[in-house]
Length: 330
Image 1: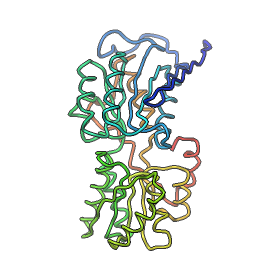
Image 2 (image 1 turned 30 degrees about the vertical axis):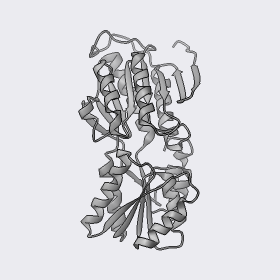
Image 3 (image 1 turned 60 degrees about the horizontal axis):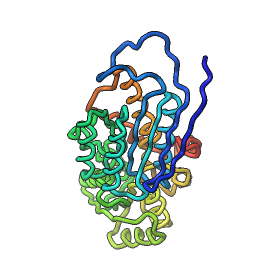
C-alpha cells in the first residue's frame, strides 16, 4: 500500500479557527458501483467539504464535534474547512456560509440554530451544493432543501428527559436555558413542559449566562421562589451550575450533554442523568456521507433525520462514558 503524508494546515482567522486536514483514505480496486448524482466522480483525495457551525472554538461540546469531523477527514482522505464565529452570531454565520459557497465545495455541513440562517442555506442549495445539517435544525432542514439532518430531535429529547424527571417525582420544573433564541434549546424546554403537563405539573424557563459566576445563585433563587423540585439544563455548564445551586436540597437535576465534570457529578449522584446526543457522530457522519456522495453518488434516505440521540447516562453507566469523554469522544 502506498505511503501517504499527513498534511495539516491550521489557519487562524478572526471568525474562529479554520483547519484543513488531509490524511490517507482507503484504496479500492475496480470502478465505483454508482455514478455521482451530478457530474463525474470526485477522485480520492480531492473531495472538499466546508463546515460552518454556531459553536465557539472554546466549547468542550463542540470540540467533540470537531474531533469527529477531523477523524472522518483523516480516515476518508477529505479536505475539510471548518469555521465558526467566536461568539454566537446569525449574521456572522450567514457570512461564513456565503464564503464557503463561493469556494464551490463538494459539500457543506451547517448547524441551524436560528431561522435567520435560512436565506444563506437556501443560497447554498440553489448553488447546487449538497448540504447536511447537524445538531440544531431538525425542525426546519427539510423546508430549506437540506439533504439530511444528523442530530437529535430536540423536542423529543426534552420530552424524554422531562419524563425521567417526572418518574423521579418532579412536578414543578425549571428549564435552565443558556442560549436565548436558539430554536434547539427552546425545543428542549418545550419538551420538558409537555412532560410536566402529562403528569399535571408545570415548568418555566430561566435564561442564564453560563459564563457568569453568579449563575448557581440565580438558579437557587428561582428554585426557592417557585417551589421547584426538578431542574433540566439545556447544556452541561448549566447542569453543573444547577447542581451547585441546589446542593443539599431535595431537587432533582438533569442536564443535556456530557463532559468529565458532568459524568463525575452523575456518578456522585449530584445529577440524576445526562442526555448524550453523541456529538462525535454529528461531526463524523456528515463528512462520511458527503464524501461517499461525491465519490459514488450514494447517500442515506434524503430528508430524514439520522438520530444520534437522545441517549441517557445515569449512575449505572457513567464510568464507561467518562473514559470516552476524557478522549473527546463522548
